[in-house]
Amino acid sequence: MPAIRHAASALALTGLLAAPAAAQTWDARADFSPTTNPNGAWTYGYATAVGTPGAPAAVTVHTSTSTTADVHSWFTSGLCGDNTPAVAKNLGATAFTYGGSGNIGAGELVLHPGCSNQYSVVRFTAPAAGFTPGAYDLMASFRGADIGYRTIGLYLNGSALFEDFLNGGATASWTGARVLAAGDVVDLVVGAAGDYRFDQTGANLTISAVSAPVSAVPEPGTWALLATGLVAVGSIARRRRVVAG
Image (cartoon, rainbow, N blue to C red; front, side):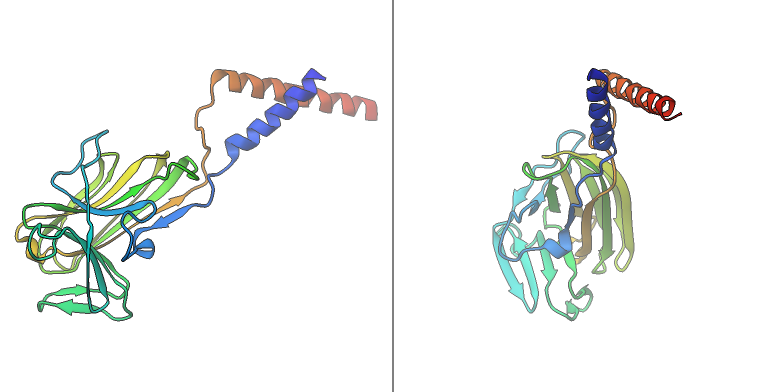
């Protein structure tokens, strides 16, 4: 019967609108690879300018690696002569200290800007395959891992979600929910604000799906189908009560 078909379609549609995104989570620190770049959804590189709304920063992918103690770094060879700008992680179980002032905690991910105002960038690109569009929690954290004064930021498709300055030893964080689709780009960025040599910064970015509809605003025809189905369900329930009485 048409009414029953409409009711079934409406109930299925209601389930779709209420369905959360799949339980997908990415963590820049936990996902770090010392051997692969790009690494799945993550890219380690540098940019000479931050993005603008709708135009993410042009990121150059690092192709060189180095290891000091348990610290594994990605950088671009010959750019500054001191293996910066760089993205690195301490894979060891103890903190690594250097130069009398710098320190990288056990398991910590760090970004270091370059000698000519290059920004250090960890980029997340929502995968083209297997990515569930919907609302995601974005959580960025920063720690001044040396005595310098640096710029920090988080950008979605070139638009700034968070920008600030950070002193050595200080911390900062940002958390917010945004709707993401395949191909969207989120950049975790550290830049120099003074002498770049002391601007190493502990940082992390996590992106986790939250319970949210895949489509927040159904089309008018969708609402009509839903309304028709709900009316049909009500009519069927009333008829059953009459028969039972």
